[in-house]
Amino acid sequence: MGFIFFPRLEHSCANVRHCPHLGGASLSMVVSAANANSQHIEMLYGQLAAEREAVHRLVEQNSQLQQQLEQARRELRAERQRRFTKDRPAVVEQPVVVPLRKRRKKRGAPVGHPGRYRPQPTVWNRVIEVAAPNVCPHCGGAVREHPHRPPDDHLQEDVVDGRPQVILYRHAAARCRHCRLWVRQAGEGELLGKRIGPHARAMAAFLHNEIGVSARKVPRAIEGLTGLGFTSATFLEFEADLARQAKPVVQDILAKISSTENTVHADETYWSLDGKRAFFWIHATGRYVHFHCSRSRAGKVSRRILGDHFAGILVTDCYAGYDAQPARAKQKCLAHLTRTARDWHQVVPEKSLAWAYFEKVKSWVTRACRFHRRRNTLDDLRIRAETGWLRKELQRLLETETHDHDRTCRLQKRLGRYATEWLTFLDRPETPPTNNHAEMLLRSLVILRKITFGNRSEAGARRTARLMTVMTTAKRHGHRALDIYYRMAVDPPDRVLRHLYSGP
Ligand SMILES: [Zn+2]
Image (cartoon, rainbow, N blue to C red):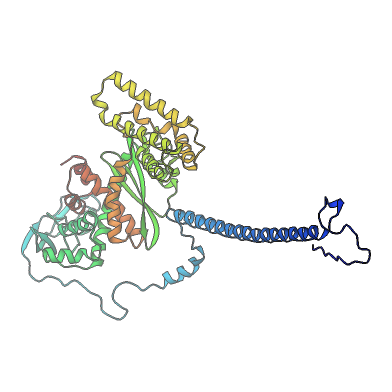
Protein backbone atom coordinates (compact mmCIF):
# COMPACT_ATOMS: atom_id res chain seq x y z
CA MET A 1 0.00 0.00 0.00
CA GLY A 2 1.35 3.49 -0.92
CA PHE A 3 0.62 6.84 0.75
CA ILE A 4 0.36 10.12 -1.24
CA PHE A 5 1.14 13.57 0.20
CA PHE A 6 -0.51 16.71 -1.25
CA PRO A 7 0.97 19.78 0.59
CA ARG A 8 -1.31 22.25 -1.28
CA LEU A 9 -4.71 20.77 -0.38
CA GLU A 10 -7.52 23.46 0.07
CA HIS A 11 -7.79 22.95 3.85
CA SER A 12 -4.05 23.07 4.29
CA CYS A 13 -2.85 22.76 7.88
CA ALA A 14 -0.41 25.29 9.32
CA ASN A 15 1.39 22.51 11.16
CA VAL A 16 2.05 20.48 8.09
CA ARG A 17 5.83 20.84 8.43
CA HIS A 18 5.97 20.32 12.21
CA CYS A 19 2.91 18.45 13.44
CA PRO A 20 2.60 18.35 17.25
CA HIS A 21 0.65 15.03 17.00
CA LEU A 22 3.65 13.45 15.26
CA GLY A 23 6.16 14.67 17.85
CA GLY A 24 7.14 17.66 15.69
CA ALA A 25 7.92 15.63 12.58
CA SER A 26 6.82 16.87 9.18
CA LEU A 27 3.90 15.02 7.49
CA SER A 28 5.89 14.51 4.28
CA MET A 29 8.59 12.67 6.20
CA VAL A 30 6.03 10.36 7.87
CA VAL A 31 4.45 9.57 4.49
CA SER A 32 7.81 8.84 2.88
CA ALA A 33 8.83 6.63 5.86
CA ALA A 34 5.57 4.65 5.62
CA ASN A 35 6.09 4.20 1.86
CA ALA A 36 9.67 2.98 2.38
CA ASN A 37 8.41 0.47 5.00
CA SER A 38 5.77 -0.97 2.69
CA GLN A 39 8.45 -1.54 0.01
CA HIS A 40 10.47 -3.52 2.55
CA ILE A 41 7.45 -5.62 3.47
CA GLU A 42 6.75 -6.31 -0.19
CA MET A 43 10.32 -7.43 -0.64
CA LEU A 44 9.89 -9.78 2.32
CA TYR A 45 6.69 -11.17 0.81
CA GLY A 46 8.56 -11.77 -2.43
CA GLN A 47 11.33 -13.63 -0.60
CA LEU A 48 8.73 -15.72 1.23
CA ALA A 49 7.09 -16.72 -2.03
CA ALA A 50 10.45 -17.69 -3.54
CA GLU A 51 11.31 -19.80 -0.46
CA ARG A 52 7.89 -21.48 -0.58
CA GLU A 53 8.47 -22.39 -4.19
CA ALA A 54 11.91 -23.83 -3.38
CA VAL A 55 10.48 -25.90 -0.52
CA HIS A 56 7.70 -27.15 -2.76
CA ARG A 57 10.26 -28.18 -5.36
CA LEU A 58 12.33 -30.04 -2.74
CA VAL A 59 9.26 -31.84 -1.38
CA GLU A 60 8.41 -33.01 -4.88
CA GLN A 61 11.98 -34.14 -5.48
CA ASN A 62 11.95 -35.96 -2.16
CA SER A 63 8.78 -37.87 -2.93
CA GLN A 64 10.20 -38.86 -6.33
CA LEU A 65 13.37 -40.15 -4.69
CA GLN A 66 11.33 -42.05 -2.15
CA GLN A 67 9.38 -43.71 -4.94
CA GLN A 68 12.61 -44.64 -6.67
CA LEU A 69 14.02 -46.06 -3.43
CA GLU A 70 10.85 -48.05 -2.86
CA GLN A 71 11.09 -49.37 -6.43
CA ALA A 72 14.76 -50.30 -6.01
CA ARG A 73 13.93 -52.12 -2.75
CA ARG A 74 11.14 -54.03 -4.42
CA GLU A 75 13.43 -55.01 -7.29
CA LEU A 76 16.14 -56.14 -4.89
CA ARG A 77 13.67 -58.21 -2.92
CA ALA A 78 12.31 -59.75 -6.11
CA GLU A 79 15.83 -60.49 -7.30
CA ARG A 80 16.70 -62.18 -4.02
CA GLN A 81 13.49 -64.20 -4.06
CA ARG A 82 14.01 -65.19 -7.66
CA ARG A 83 17.30 -66.80 -6.69
CA PHE A 84 15.44 -69.28 -4.52
CA THR A 85 11.90 -69.61 -5.87
CA LYS A 86 10.96 -72.86 -7.52
CA ASP A 87 9.27 -71.09 -10.44
CA ARG A 88 10.43 -67.96 -12.13
CA PRO A 89 7.80 -65.24 -12.14
CA ALA A 90 7.37 -65.63 -15.89
CA VAL A 91 4.22 -67.68 -15.41
CA VAL A 92 2.56 -65.87 -18.28
CA GLU A 93 5.08 -67.30 -20.70
CA GLN A 94 4.25 -70.85 -19.69
CA PRO A 95 1.61 -71.53 -22.37
CA VAL A 96 4.03 -70.25 -25.01
CA VAL A 97 6.86 -72.46 -23.82
CA VAL A 98 4.91 -75.73 -23.80
CA PRO A 99 4.05 -76.00 -27.50
CA LEU A 100 7.58 -74.90 -28.34
CA ARG A 101 8.99 -77.74 -26.26
CA LYS A 102 6.70 -80.20 -27.94
CA ARG A 103 7.89 -79.09 -31.33
CA ARG A 104 11.54 -79.39 -30.36
CA LYS A 105 13.63 -81.19 -32.94
CA LYS A 106 14.14 -84.85 -32.29
CA ARG A 107 17.73 -85.67 -31.50
CA GLY A 108 19.74 -87.86 -33.83
CA ALA A 109 20.03 -88.09 -37.60
CA PRO A 110 17.53 -85.98 -39.63
CA VAL A 111 14.47 -87.83 -40.96
CA GLY A 112 15.32 -89.82 -44.07
CA HIS A 113 19.05 -89.97 -43.31
CA PRO A 114 20.59 -93.22 -42.19
CA GLY A 115 21.48 -93.35 -38.48
CA ARG A 116 24.97 -94.02 -37.24
CA TYR A 117 25.60 -97.64 -36.37
CA ARG A 118 28.62 -99.10 -34.67
CA PRO A 119 30.47 -101.37 -37.13
CA GLN A 120 30.85 -104.97 -35.97
CA PRO A 121 34.55 -105.75 -35.40
CA THR A 122 35.91 -108.45 -37.69
CA VAL A 123 39.11 -109.23 -35.77
CA TRP A 124 39.59 -109.81 -32.07
CA ASN A 125 42.50 -109.74 -29.64
CA ARG A 126 41.41 -112.48 -27.25
CA VAL A 127 38.98 -115.34 -27.04
CA ILE A 128 37.48 -116.29 -23.68
CA GLU A 129 35.58 -119.54 -23.35
CA VAL A 130 32.62 -119.21 -20.98
CA ALA A 131 31.04 -122.31 -19.49
CA ALA A 132 27.28 -122.71 -19.26
CA PRO A 133 25.64 -121.79 -15.91
CA ASN A 134 24.72 -124.60 -13.51
CA VAL A 135 21.21 -123.31 -12.92
CA CYS A 136 18.86 -121.32 -15.14
CA PRO A 137 19.08 -117.55 -14.41
CA HIS A 138 15.39 -117.17 -15.35
CA CYS A 139 13.70 -119.88 -13.32
CA GLY A 140 16.43 -121.61 -11.31
CA GLY A 141 15.84 -124.93 -13.06
CA ALA A 142 18.48 -127.44 -14.16
CA VAL A 143 20.50 -126.67 -17.31
CA ARG A 144 21.51 -129.12 -20.00
CA GLU A 145 24.49 -128.49 -22.27
CA HIS A 146 24.28 -129.06 -26.02
CA PRO A 147 27.94 -129.62 -27.06
CA HIS A 148 26.99 -130.57 -30.61
CA ARG A 149 25.46 -127.12 -31.21
CA PRO A 150 27.62 -124.20 -32.38
CA PRO A 151 28.73 -121.89 -29.50
CA ASP A 152 27.14 -118.48 -28.93
CA ASP A 153 29.72 -115.75 -29.76
CA HIS A 154 29.64 -112.29 -28.22
CA LEU A 155 32.10 -109.58 -29.33
CA GLN A 156 32.79 -106.86 -26.82
CA GLU A 157 35.07 -103.85 -27.16
CA ASP A 158 36.69 -102.48 -24.04
CA VAL A 159 39.70 -100.60 -22.74
CA VAL A 160 42.26 -102.99 -21.25
CA ASP A 161 45.51 -101.54 -19.84
CA GLY A 162 44.77 -98.24 -21.50
CA ARG A 163 44.32 -99.71 -25.01
CA PRO A 164 41.19 -100.67 -26.95
CA GLN A 165 40.71 -104.41 -27.22
CA VAL A 166 38.12 -106.62 -28.84
CA ILE A 167 37.32 -109.73 -26.79
CA LEU A 168 35.34 -112.65 -28.12
CA TYR A 169 33.30 -114.40 -25.42
CA ARG A 170 32.45 -117.91 -26.60
CA HIS A 171 29.46 -119.26 -24.68
CA ALA A 172 28.74 -122.98 -24.68
CA ALA A 173 25.24 -123.72 -25.92
CA ALA A 174 22.97 -124.74 -23.04
CA ARG A 175 19.26 -124.86 -22.41
CA CYS A 176 17.06 -124.87 -19.32
CA ARG A 177 15.23 -128.16 -18.84
CA HIS A 178 12.34 -126.45 -17.15
CA CYS A 179 11.55 -123.19 -19.01
CA ARG A 180 13.21 -124.30 -22.28
CA LEU A 181 15.12 -120.99 -22.70
CA TRP A 182 18.67 -120.88 -24.03
CA VAL A 183 20.89 -119.70 -21.18
CA ARG A 184 24.40 -118.29 -20.70
CA GLN A 185 26.35 -116.51 -17.98
CA ALA A 186 28.64 -113.49 -18.17
CA GLY A 187 32.37 -114.15 -18.42
CA GLU A 188 35.12 -112.17 -16.69
CA GLY A 189 34.56 -108.47 -17.49
CA GLU A 190 31.63 -109.23 -19.79
CA LEU A 191 28.31 -107.41 -19.99
CA LEU A 192 25.83 -109.71 -21.68
CA GLY A 193 24.31 -108.22 -24.81
CA LYS A 194 26.50 -105.09 -24.69
CA ARG A 195 28.96 -104.00 -27.34
CA ILE A 196 31.17 -101.92 -25.05
CA GLY A 197 32.66 -103.31 -21.87
CA PRO A 198 32.61 -102.16 -18.23
CA HIS A 199 36.07 -100.57 -18.10
CA ALA A 200 35.20 -98.01 -20.78
CA ARG A 201 31.83 -97.37 -19.14
CA ALA A 202 33.39 -96.82 -15.73
CA MET A 203 35.97 -94.51 -17.24
CA ALA A 204 33.25 -92.45 -18.95
CA ALA A 205 31.18 -92.15 -15.77
CA PHE A 206 34.31 -91.20 -13.82
CA LEU A 207 35.23 -88.46 -16.31
CA HIS A 208 31.70 -87.08 -16.28
CA ASN A 209 30.83 -87.20 -12.57
CA GLU A 210 34.17 -86.93 -10.82
CA ILE A 211 36.21 -84.75 -13.18
CA GLY A 212 33.26 -82.78 -14.56
CA VAL A 213 33.87 -83.37 -18.28
CA SER A 214 30.67 -82.51 -20.14
CA ALA A 215 28.65 -85.37 -21.68
CA ARG A 216 29.51 -84.18 -25.17
CA LYS A 217 33.25 -84.22 -24.49
CA VAL A 218 33.50 -87.56 -22.65
CA PRO A 219 33.60 -89.66 -25.87
CA ARG A 220 36.24 -87.34 -27.30
CA ALA A 221 38.31 -87.60 -24.12
CA ILE A 222 38.17 -91.40 -24.12
CA GLU A 223 38.87 -91.67 -27.82
CA GLY A 224 41.83 -89.34 -27.46
CA LEU A 225 43.23 -91.13 -24.42
CA THR A 226 42.61 -94.76 -25.34
CA GLY A 227 41.54 -94.94 -28.98
CA LEU A 228 38.10 -96.44 -28.27
CA GLY A 229 35.40 -94.38 -29.99
CA PHE A 230 31.69 -94.05 -29.27
CA THR A 231 29.02 -91.35 -29.54
CA SER A 232 27.53 -89.06 -26.89
CA ALA A 233 24.21 -90.89 -27.16
CA THR A 234 26.03 -94.14 -26.34
CA PHE A 235 27.57 -92.45 -23.33
CA LEU A 236 24.12 -91.41 -22.07
CA GLU A 237 23.08 -95.03 -22.46
CA PHE A 238 26.07 -96.09 -20.30
CA GLU A 239 25.01 -93.73 -17.55
CA ALA A 240 21.39 -94.87 -17.77
CA ASP A 241 22.55 -98.49 -17.31
CA LEU A 242 24.79 -97.56 -14.40
CA ALA A 243 22.06 -95.47 -12.75
CA ARG A 244 19.63 -98.39 -13.05
CA GLN A 245 22.18 -100.61 -11.31
CA ALA A 246 22.79 -97.89 -8.71
CA LYS A 247 19.14 -97.54 -7.67
CA PRO A 248 19.10 -100.27 -4.96
CA VAL A 249 22.50 -99.10 -3.70
CA VAL A 250 21.20 -95.53 -3.39
CA GLN A 251 18.10 -96.77 -1.55
CA ASP A 252 20.30 -98.61 0.92
CA ILE A 253 22.50 -95.55 1.49
CA LEU A 254 19.40 -93.42 2.04
CA ALA A 255 17.99 -95.94 4.53
CA LYS A 256 21.28 -95.79 6.43
CA ILE A 257 21.12 -91.98 6.61
CA SER A 258 17.45 -91.70 7.57
CA SER A 259 17.70 -94.37 10.27
CA THR A 260 20.83 -93.03 11.92
CA GLU A 261 20.80 -91.61 15.43
CA ASN A 262 23.95 -89.61 14.80
CA THR A 263 24.56 -86.32 13.08
CA VAL A 264 23.13 -85.68 9.60
CA HIS A 265 24.18 -82.61 7.67
CA ALA A 266 21.67 -81.16 5.21
CA ASP A 267 22.08 -78.41 2.65
CA GLU A 268 20.94 -77.46 -0.83
CA THR A 269 22.32 -75.66 -3.84
CA TYR A 270 20.68 -74.53 -7.02
CA TRP A 271 20.98 -76.47 -10.25
CA SER A 272 19.91 -75.93 -13.80
CA LEU A 273 17.35 -78.28 -15.32
CA ASP A 274 16.77 -77.56 -19.00
CA GLY A 275 17.57 -73.91 -18.32
CA LYS A 276 15.13 -73.71 -15.41
CA ARG A 277 15.86 -73.43 -11.73
CA ALA A 278 16.12 -76.66 -9.74
CA PHE A 279 17.86 -77.67 -6.51
CA PHE A 280 20.28 -80.34 -5.45
CA TRP A 281 19.68 -81.49 -1.89
CA ILE A 282 22.38 -83.18 0.08
CA HIS A 283 22.03 -85.26 3.24
CA ALA A 284 25.21 -86.68 4.68
CA THR A 285 26.56 -88.42 7.72
CA GLY A 286 30.28 -88.93 8.13
CA ARG A 287 30.33 -92.00 5.84
CA TYR A 288 27.11 -91.88 3.83
CA VAL A 289 26.19 -89.15 1.37
CA HIS A 290 22.92 -88.81 -0.51
CA PHE A 291 22.18 -86.42 -3.37
CA HIS A 292 18.72 -85.63 -4.66
CA CYS A 293 17.61 -83.29 -7.42
CA SER A 294 14.24 -81.57 -7.25
CA ARG A 295 12.57 -78.61 -8.91
CA SER A 296 11.36 -77.52 -5.49
CA ARG A 297 13.19 -75.89 -2.62
CA ALA A 298 10.31 -76.54 -0.22
CA GLY A 299 11.18 -78.21 3.08
CA LYS A 300 8.96 -81.17 2.27
CA VAL A 301 11.63 -82.46 -0.14
CA SER A 302 14.01 -82.86 2.78
CA ARG A 303 11.23 -84.34 4.95
CA ARG A 304 10.45 -86.89 2.25
CA ILE A 305 14.12 -87.88 2.13
CA LEU A 306 14.67 -88.18 5.88
CA GLY A 307 11.17 -89.37 6.74
CA ASP A 308 8.86 -88.46 9.62
CA HIS A 309 10.59 -90.80 12.06
CA PHE A 310 14.04 -89.32 11.71
CA ALA A 311 15.74 -89.52 15.11
CA GLY A 312 19.19 -88.14 14.40
CA ILE A 313 20.70 -84.71 14.99
CA LEU A 314 20.15 -82.42 12.03
CA VAL A 315 22.80 -79.80 11.24
CA THR A 316 21.58 -77.12 8.81
CA ASP A 317 21.81 -73.43 8.05
CA CYS A 318 18.98 -71.08 9.04
CA TYR A 319 16.81 -71.86 5.99
CA ALA A 320 13.24 -72.09 7.32
CA GLY A 321 12.51 -75.15 5.15
CA TYR A 322 14.12 -77.38 7.77
CA ASP A 323 12.00 -76.02 10.64
CA ALA A 324 9.20 -78.58 10.26
CA GLN A 325 11.56 -81.57 10.01
CA PRO A 326 11.18 -83.76 13.10
CA ALA A 327 14.54 -84.67 14.67
CA ARG A 328 15.97 -85.67 18.03
CA ALA A 329 17.89 -82.43 18.13
CA LYS A 330 18.98 -79.73 15.71
CA GLN A 331 22.13 -77.70 15.39
CA LYS A 332 22.11 -74.48 13.39
CA CYS A 333 25.32 -73.59 11.61
CA LEU A 334 27.34 -71.07 13.62
CA ALA A 335 29.51 -70.25 10.61
CA HIS A 336 26.48 -68.86 8.78
CA LEU A 337 25.67 -66.71 11.80
CA THR A 338 29.13 -65.24 12.00
CA ARG A 339 29.13 -64.65 8.24
CA THR A 340 25.95 -62.59 8.55
CA ALA A 341 27.36 -60.70 11.52
CA ARG A 342 30.55 -59.98 9.58
CA ASP A 343 28.64 -58.67 6.53
CA TRP A 344 26.36 -56.44 8.57
CA HIS A 345 29.24 -55.29 10.73
CA GLN A 346 30.50 -53.39 7.70
CA VAL A 347 27.28 -51.48 7.04
CA VAL A 348 26.76 -49.98 10.51
CA PRO A 349 28.64 -46.93 11.85
CA GLU A 350 31.84 -47.78 13.62
CA LYS A 351 31.76 -47.91 17.46
CA SER A 352 27.95 -47.72 17.44
CA LEU A 353 25.86 -50.03 19.63
CA ALA A 354 25.02 -52.20 16.60
CA TRP A 355 28.72 -52.44 15.71
CA ALA A 356 29.51 -53.61 19.25
CA TYR A 357 26.66 -56.14 19.11
CA PHE A 358 27.98 -57.75 15.92
CA GLU A 359 31.47 -57.83 17.48
CA LYS A 360 30.01 -59.72 20.44
CA VAL A 361 28.20 -62.23 18.23
CA LYS A 362 31.39 -62.85 16.25
CA SER A 363 33.53 -63.43 19.30
CA TRP A 364 30.85 -65.69 20.84
CA VAL A 365 30.89 -67.88 17.70
CA THR A 366 34.69 -67.92 17.55
CA ARG A 367 34.89 -69.03 21.17
CA ALA A 368 32.22 -71.72 20.62
CA CYS A 369 34.08 -73.15 17.61
CA ARG A 370 37.40 -73.06 19.41
CA PHE A 371 35.83 -74.87 22.37
CA HIS A 372 34.53 -77.60 20.04
CA ARG A 373 37.96 -78.06 18.45
CA ARG A 374 39.86 -78.22 21.74
CA ARG A 375 37.25 -80.05 23.78
CA ASN A 376 39.29 -83.26 24.06
CA THR A 377 42.27 -81.46 25.57
CA LEU A 378 40.26 -79.69 28.30
CA ASP A 379 39.54 -81.03 31.79
CA ASP A 380 36.02 -81.26 33.27
CA LEU A 381 36.29 -78.04 35.21
CA ARG A 382 37.32 -76.07 32.15
CA ILE A 383 34.57 -77.67 30.05
CA ARG A 384 31.95 -76.70 32.63
CA ALA A 385 33.27 -73.15 32.77
CA GLU A 386 33.29 -72.74 28.96
CA THR A 387 29.82 -74.23 28.40
CA GLY A 388 28.48 -72.04 31.20
CA TRP A 389 29.96 -68.93 29.64
CA LEU A 390 28.67 -69.81 26.15
CA ARG A 391 25.14 -70.32 27.44
CA LYS A 392 25.21 -67.13 29.51
CA GLU A 393 26.62 -65.12 26.61
CA LEU A 394 23.81 -66.37 24.35
CA GLN A 395 21.32 -65.25 26.98
CA ARG A 396 23.01 -61.85 27.16
CA LEU A 397 22.92 -61.51 23.36
CA LEU A 398 19.21 -62.32 23.40
CA GLU A 399 18.46 -59.77 26.12
CA THR A 400 20.58 -56.82 24.86
CA GLU A 401 18.58 -53.76 23.78
CA THR A 402 19.03 -53.54 20.00
CA HIS A 403 16.73 -50.73 18.94
CA ASP A 404 19.40 -48.53 17.38
CA HIS A 405 19.62 -50.45 14.06
CA ASP A 406 17.21 -52.72 12.17
CA ARG A 407 20.02 -55.17 11.26
CA THR A 408 20.75 -55.81 14.92
CA CYS A 409 17.07 -56.45 15.55
CA ARG A 410 17.03 -58.95 12.67
CA LEU A 411 20.07 -60.82 13.92
CA GLN A 412 18.69 -60.91 17.45
CA LYS A 413 15.37 -62.19 16.12
CA ARG A 414 17.21 -64.96 14.29
CA LEU A 415 19.14 -65.83 17.45
CA GLY A 416 15.86 -65.95 19.34
CA ARG A 417 14.00 -68.05 16.78
CA TYR A 418 16.55 -70.87 17.06
CA ALA A 419 17.55 -70.14 20.68
CA THR A 420 17.59 -73.84 21.59
CA GLU A 421 19.44 -74.91 18.43
CA TRP A 422 22.70 -72.98 18.62
CA LEU A 423 24.42 -74.85 21.42
CA THR A 424 23.32 -78.45 20.79
CA PHE A 425 26.97 -79.39 20.25
CA LEU A 426 27.77 -78.61 23.89
CA ASP A 427 25.77 -81.65 25.05
CA ARG A 428 26.74 -83.84 22.09
CA PRO A 429 30.47 -83.70 21.42
CA GLU A 430 30.12 -85.70 18.17
CA THR A 431 27.99 -82.96 16.58
CA PRO A 432 29.97 -80.11 15.00
CA PRO A 433 28.75 -76.52 15.46
CA THR A 434 28.95 -75.76 11.72
CA ASN A 435 27.58 -77.23 8.50
CA ASN A 436 30.95 -77.25 6.74
CA HIS A 437 30.77 -80.97 5.96
CA ALA A 438 27.70 -80.56 3.72
CA GLU A 439 29.08 -77.41 2.15
CA MET A 440 32.32 -79.14 1.22
CA LEU A 441 30.40 -82.00 -0.37
CA LEU A 442 28.30 -79.52 -2.34
CA ARG A 443 31.38 -77.84 -3.72
CA SER A 444 32.10 -80.60 -6.24
CA LEU A 445 28.51 -80.30 -7.43
CA VAL A 446 28.84 -76.53 -7.81
CA ILE A 447 31.95 -77.01 -9.95
CA LEU A 448 30.09 -79.61 -12.04
CA ARG A 449 27.24 -77.13 -12.55
CA LYS A 450 29.62 -74.43 -13.67
CA ILE A 451 31.17 -76.74 -16.25
CA THR A 452 28.13 -78.63 -17.53
CA PHE A 453 25.36 -76.04 -16.89
CA GLY A 454 23.21 -78.67 -15.19
CA ASN A 455 21.09 -81.31 -16.88
CA ARG A 456 18.74 -81.25 -19.85
CA SER A 457 16.09 -83.53 -18.36
CA GLU A 458 14.82 -84.74 -15.00
CA ALA A 459 15.96 -88.24 -15.87
CA GLY A 460 19.47 -86.88 -16.44
CA ALA A 461 19.41 -85.10 -13.08
CA ARG A 462 18.23 -88.31 -11.39
CA ARG A 463 21.12 -90.18 -13.00
CA THR A 464 23.62 -87.56 -11.83
CA ALA A 465 22.18 -87.72 -8.30
CA ARG A 466 22.43 -91.51 -8.12
CA LEU A 467 25.92 -91.75 -9.57
CA MET A 468 27.16 -88.94 -7.31
CA THR A 469 25.57 -90.62 -4.27
CA VAL A 470 27.30 -93.94 -4.90
CA MET A 471 30.60 -92.35 -5.88
CA THR A 472 30.82 -89.98 -2.90
CA THR A 473 29.80 -92.67 -0.42
CA ALA A 474 32.36 -95.05 -1.95
CA LYS A 475 35.06 -92.43 -1.59
CA ARG A 476 34.09 -91.95 2.06
CA HIS A 477 34.62 -95.71 2.49
CA GLY A 478 38.08 -95.54 0.96
CA HIS A 479 37.29 -96.72 -2.59
CA ARG A 480 38.30 -95.15 -5.87
CA ALA A 481 35.52 -93.70 -8.02
CA LEU A 482 36.65 -95.61 -11.12
CA ASP A 483 36.68 -98.86 -9.17
CA ILE A 484 33.16 -98.49 -7.80
CA TYR A 485 31.74 -97.62 -11.25
CA TYR A 486 33.37 -100.77 -12.66
CA ARG A 487 31.83 -102.84 -9.85
CA MET A 488 28.44 -101.29 -10.50
CA ALA A 489 28.67 -102.21 -14.17
CA VAL A 490 29.62 -105.89 -13.64
CA ASP A 491 28.25 -106.93 -10.23
CA PRO A 492 24.67 -107.26 -8.97
CA PRO A 493 23.64 -104.57 -6.44
CA ASP A 494 23.96 -106.78 -3.35
CA ARG A 495 27.58 -107.56 -4.16
CA VAL A 496 28.24 -103.89 -4.91
CA LEU A 497 26.86 -103.03 -1.47
CA ARG A 498 28.98 -105.67 0.28
CA HIS A 499 32.06 -104.38 -1.52
CA LEU A 500 31.12 -100.76 -0.80
CA TYR A 501 30.77 -101.22 2.96
CA SER A 502 33.71 -103.60 3.32
CA GLY A 503 36.21 -100.77 2.94
CA PRO A 504 39.28 -100.67 0.71
ZN1 LIG B 1 14.65 -121.88 -16.78
